[in-house]
Image (cartoon, rainbow, N blue to C red; front, side, top):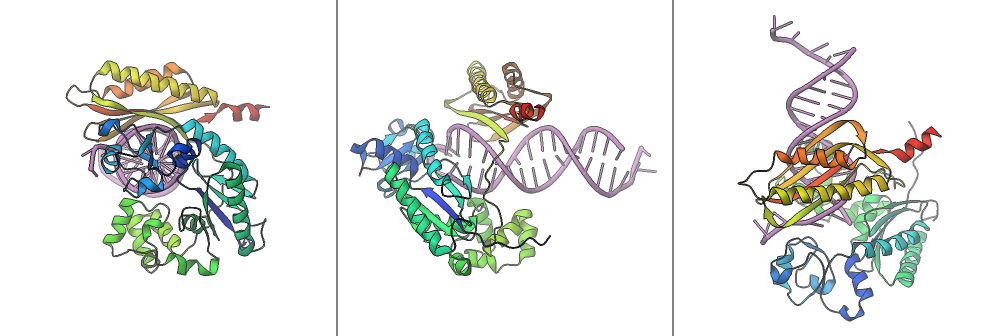
Length: 360
DNA sequence: TCTGGGGTCCTAGGACCC
DNA sequence: TCTGGGGTCCTAGGACCC
């Protein structure tokens, strides 16, 4: 197939320290202080992690993902706030509506990020930069929140750009400059390169994206499978993935970490039933049936297991969820092993709404 | 470092079918 | 029963994203 190659211009918009920024906006008295949004620190004995912190807290080393107990030790005087998810969802919906208006194709990426394909809306990168400034201005005027925007010839470069000058940044990299831009950056900056992959690459003598771009593609493919080829292409700045307007839901899940590790089977079953009920609500409200159910447990030593089964039929009945999850968790209940977390996931989803439409 | 909760995608082995 | 090859589905685990 010889599809005519079209020059694309993609924007990636990333809200700055989103959860913390919304809290600062709602509570003016905490502005200027270190703010940590996440689990309850409980005077240094809490469970869970930091979700988002503001820049004042980051000065103390309090960053996203660290245990809340550690945050407490680093900065006990910070303002600690619980995650007010429904508030952030409302703010996010308004911001996404603004962004969507600027894009030919639009893809939400979590609550606080989005990709915009603006290829048909601007003639060149100069115009794209002006458009990005306009977007930043509108978001700030309407929501009093700042964002960082990356402009590039594809999603990969746009995403890396938006992270380049945070906060309130705007970085533009044209197709002809992308190799020079990417080359000195750490491989960790690439999408899908997390801690494990970074370590493996470092062991191979690969530190920067430039090192990766000069590496033998066949060796990468051999060591990392399909992901290896993807890594090599990304390092060249090649990413042909489209901005995806629609996302099909593949699974829904609920999980919870106990306040204290437990082997109390009554508590475990009650918790499991509550998770099942919660899932059932969402399943029916969103008009799905499911066929596969998986239970997840994590023991006190963090050893984690999943156990699932596929039913011979699609269902949305609560009793099917509860009975199956109870059966599945049974194998893991042992009087000598305390459980830290349990969860339930429904997959193999089928949209009954779509079915009705097709039948019409 | 004592590690949340909601997702997606990939891999590898085994069952089962033709 | 010592044997094949391809395709699909299922299961468990792991890496990664926000």
